[in-house]
Structure formats: structure tokens, C-alpha cells
Length: 106
Image (cartoon, rainbow, N blue to C red; front, side, top):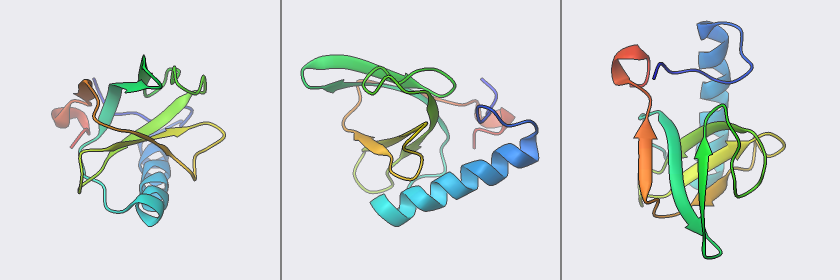
């Protein structure tokens, strides 16, 4: 799938917003990879949850705006509406999908 950021109108705006979220996530959580994550499936509280950019994160019930992969420990950070500057952690996902690298997914 081609890379996008929900509720942005053009590729330049999407890149700018994504870069700002990336910087905020790194400031709080440490370095993240350059791979652009489309979705993760993970377990929290004994229940299986999923988060997909542009859809709902089933753990929080909020819209998923971006997902970042930690460069250090295999964790993933999910940015949802209402918590953009404070992403929550999805540890050891059972499934990860990335945006298509040939279409802006790096």
C-alpha cells in the first residue's frame, strides 16, 4: 500500500506531519527505524488487538495516525488521535505490515 497520513491533503503535508510525529516519538521513546509501518497485531491484557494507520486501534478505540518501530528493542509505538505526542507501546507484535517501499514506505 502507498504511504499516507490520515487527514492530510497532499504528500508534502503528509511528510511534514509524519516527520513531526517521528521527532516527538523519538524524543520520548528513543530512536525509531525509517521503515513505515502500516499495521501491527499485538496482545495486551490477554486480548489480541490491532492497529492500522487510517483505521481504529482496537486497544484504545481511537483512530490510528502513525506507527513507529523502535530501532533498539523490537517494540512498536502507536500514535492515535488524542495522544499524538504520547504514543503507546505495542510490544512483540505477532504480525507487522509495512507500507510499500516503492511507494514512499522507505
